[in-house]
Amino acid sequence: MVLMVTSTAIGGTLQYGFNLAIMNAPTVFIQNFVNETFLERWGIQLGVYELTLIWTFIVSSFSLGGFIGALIAGPMSVRFGRKKTMLLNNVFLLSSSLLALLSRTAKSFEMIIISRFLVGINAGISMNVQPMYFGESAPKHLRGAVSLSSAVFTSFGLVLGQVVSLKELLGSEPCWQYLLASNAIPGFIQLLTLPWFPESPRYLLIDCGDKEACLMALQRLRGCEVQREELDEILQEQNETKGERAKQPWELFTDRSVRWQLITVAVLSSAMQLCGNDSIYFYASYVFQEAGISAGQIQYMAIGTGMCEFTACILCNLLIERLGRRLMLMGGYVLMTGWAIVFTVALSLEVWMPYLSMTCIFTYILSFGMGPAGVTGILPTEIFNQTSRPAAYMTAGSLMWLNLFIIGMIFPFLVSGLGQYCFVPFGAVCLLTALYIQMVLPETKGKTLSMITKEFYRLNYRGQFCQL
Image 1 (cartoon, helix red, strand yellow):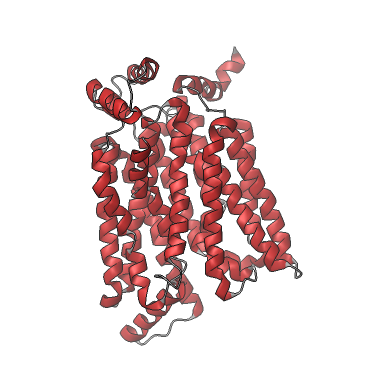
Image 2 (cartoon, helix red, strand yellow):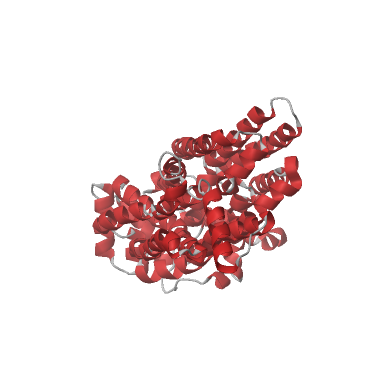
């Protein structure tokens, strides 16, 4: 099980974190490349506003690709299975790496945009299919920890990307095209290792109807005889969904029995990006400059942000089966609200401002990693059944990437426009999300799908309960 998780995540969610991080270091080099290309082709010298606009589009094409990837992840995971989808996903990754590698030689910044779009598709698929694969393959008592490993590898990818982006390695002017193409290496590792591991046992039994293959997959993943209780739970889910085909997202919108599950996933997936955490990685230079950090120290400060989230995700992995999903999520957003307020005050002060602002950024990311970063991805696996799960992940993933695209486009203008108040909108999002979790989300730790469904039933059919 550990080896399967590692193999899948190296070419999966690690890529999301890695590709978020590697775009910060070559910002100036790629902007100069774009300016030189315009000057050579059309004799036009771009102004600061035009250059920033093109740069934000280059950055945000990753999010746009992720949105497309989230939309096709569901159908691919149903048609090809979870494991094969992860393997096929590397076609987008390797195509992206090739375009990035050749962009400088071809003198085409458009190739960088297409490259970022394709690697976004890769990340969009893996961010949806990997948690599904893990959640369906893990035993109930480890489901949270195994699913949360997706977030651990995402944060590890952030740190790895930030280290590789150092000027001493690939973050220098002559090497930026190699930096953008370096994401091919984790993809090759996955292609060599993942074929040796089994498909999701639930997919094999519920979607394919192959009980024998399901038992073999469970035995390989557990390393021992399959417990009758675990098999009975999968068989129960199979009986409950017998004769049903995989649902489409629009069918979930009209299904009253999953109304509040869908609203919950939509709210939490949107909040993950609207809280502004991932934009800090896209635009670390802008944020740290605003906070008063010297230019020479910014690349090392950026590594500190990645290490914060990585450490927090490991802690969350250790605590999630003790404290539960609800507390971790709500606590994370409450802390982020507090730090956003402190950060705003810090930016308004002149004395000790750089140090206090830097501390707030680190603690903001630490709070994000302790809850929202990992727990959000687990919920669709726990609150939707097998036929609804792919559509739920499509909806969640689409909203996550759409909001990341929007935030990615407006973030640099938000920082320059609002100045010291740039984190006020993000703090408001965190506060509202914490209140929603408190009022709506039930605890899912250690519960079967039927138990969780009964708790949501009270919300979905509240009017009928009132009449009774």
